[in-house]
Length: 297
Ligand SMILES: Nc1ncnc2c1ncn2[C@@H]1O[C@H](COP(=O)(O)OP(=O)(O)OP(=O)(O)O)[C@@H](O)[C@H]1O
Ligand SMILES: Nc1nc2c(ncn2[C@@H]2O[C@H](COP(=O)(O)O)[C@@H](O)[C@H]2O)c(=O)[nH]1
Image (cartoon, rainbow, N blue to C red; front, side, top):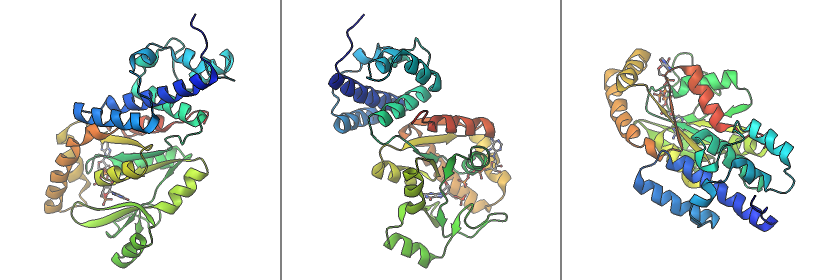
């Protein structure tokens, strides 16, 4: 049996494994160039420059067991909470397991866990539908309510689906630094994420979900690199078109514009940490919430 690392080593190993886990969760969905950039970024962020191979062969049980104050019983309970098998090696973790392990280790190390999750994806893939399902069925997840300059659709409620604001009010929110991010979406209206409610929810330890477009996701990554970026995919392109036309909320010209944007957005899916296919709403929602989970933190 290998000797237990001394406490300073444990911190380093934990930080390193967190970095490796985060990097692998992202690397699983990245192209080669982006992976190299992200890897370099992780090394820069954490100071961890060792190759992954040594840690990859470590059992997760051994990693957790090497942390002072985590005896075998607590280690077993944590593995159970994280839904990671007793025999699992770090290198054999799935995407969701890597994310929850990263969050757990970051939380223990006193870092900020990835409580902020961005859900993005092409028009009509079902982001709003999945987010609504999460709001109604997972009350412990806080949904950010965006501000927009577009007019409400039938059934949309101010303060629930969006804050419907004038151009002047949107200008004011930008000028007073009230937006975490904002963008002109589909070349038409402005949409933005009010910063205050998110800061408040995160300060209370809540998990926060942002349903925003690709530009917004990139902006959030720039200012909050610890955020988890999830890309929602349609089962097929034909189904995406069917959902957009079936929703019937845009005229033919606007549908065409949105489908052009959708092709660009789909091409960017590999920038995201995880992908979820929205075939069935409840299942897609469950997958998103599982990716957000921060057990024990
Ligand atoms: N899993 C699903 N199966 C079948 N239909 C779905 C599914 N998810 C969403 N839809 C339908 O697809 C349409 C588009 O969904 P929704 O408005 O939630 O998309 P969106 O991604 O928020 O779009 P946008 O970005 O344009 O606002 C709606 O009519 C919705 O009922
Ligand atoms: N960058 C941001 N994009 C946002 C935000 N809120 C919503 N959105 C995106 O806008 C489009 C269009 O939405 P719709 O309700 O008019 O169909 C969609 O892709 C949303 O994800 C935001 O705060 N920032």
